[in-house]
Amino acid sequence: MKTIVFTPRASKEFDALPEAAKTAVADGLARYAINGRGDVKRLQGLTGFRLRIGEYRVIFDEDRTTILTLRVGRRQTNTYG
Image (cartoon, rainbow, N blue to C red; front, side):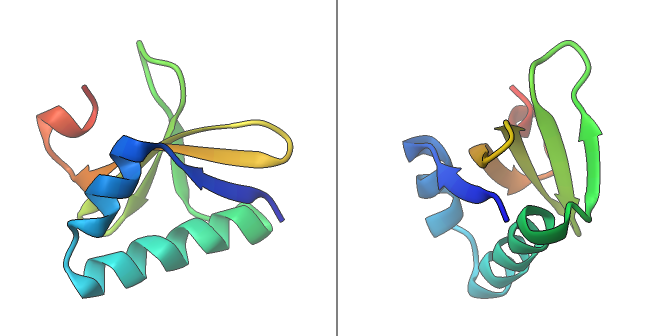
């Protein structure tokens, strides 16, 4: 299992989500950290990956032991920027 770390920005964005979305995002991140399953794609033109959880996106980077969560939000143009 990988350790999940939130940047201050991602933590603030996560805290602002509705409760149902928080649960879904937390579950999706945990599932990916435990067994590597999820709708993940490498970002084009940027470093990192995106994890799609319903209408929400988690932008992250990872190494062998850590998932660094960079952004959390609805799928919008500014989620990737």
